[in-house]
Length: 473
Image (tube, rainbow, N blue to C red):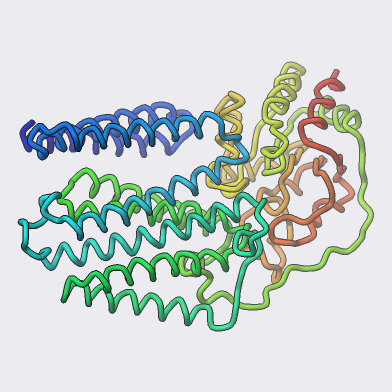
């Protein structure tokens, strides 16, 4: 295989990746986007495998190891993707990011140990200065991505007792100063590796990256996990791009740059949707105002009802907006919700879904959940499009959502002040399904639950919605 053909195939794969990103920008084209992504990755993998055979002079030993890695890694990925529950999808994404970061570190180590094997330098010759810098930076970003993603995985899982894996932020005095010192120290050792190509400098760069990844993520609370997921996605892309420059691999450079830039843009969108400072989040809360504690919930009376009561209200409405939240995902109630919507539609009720950008535990979580239940795309509306409709809607039914519909975002001085919310409080009647009156991630009481127009229906979302379906006449 000639290098001209390799370059052409890599270019074709890159075009597929660009089309994949374009397709994934909207639910109606997401399937096509995924197909483009799979096609691009297949072309890239097969081209790289053929290139390895060429560089190995036709020797099958190295190719056999590559093939074994593809089979084992691809098989493990396929099994995990097949078995993962929708509620565990954020953890899977964090795990995949950690593997990308670790792969970048391993490639950097291999390139420093045997640069001639990768065509970076001739046997016995030192690494070129530019490659040293690229490898050190790629290794550092990969290390930050790996350890940060491991912490994010633990926080998203929420089932580990280890303090660093718990959803509450972990903060201590001098934390930001320590992060700054570690970052500057890593820069010093990168310069040292560029100057001397010393293994000590290189390994210290990696160690500082692993440490900084942990320190950057532990002060970020569970409410900001959607931003963290997209941010780590960006880091993994830049790590791959950095390694690509060292290996002179255009595919890694292009794919890594696409992932890095798109992840950064998504992180910014998520921060805007949560009224968070983009730089505060990506720097581990650097510059955040301390002491912004959540308000303590006060015991208050609410108007509660049964699933039958809710079904009666829904069945006599002309328009209904469904607001799904993480509680819906936990209960796996998406199919029951679709059945309820179908039954209401058959009665002539207009049914729409309202999606907040950060509902759930990762960007697009609710969109994926509804897509799994094959909810028609034309019924699913983003926050900017659906908010003007709440004032003319008979019933807003909130299923497992809390902070994203909390009117406290309109009150100065609250931790979520300024955060854009779904304006469900404007609907003529509000039905809220929750297991209890527990606060959301922000730890704030939700004034919406105490309004005269609101009826609380307590219980598991799937069971409650199924009872509604049975009761709708």
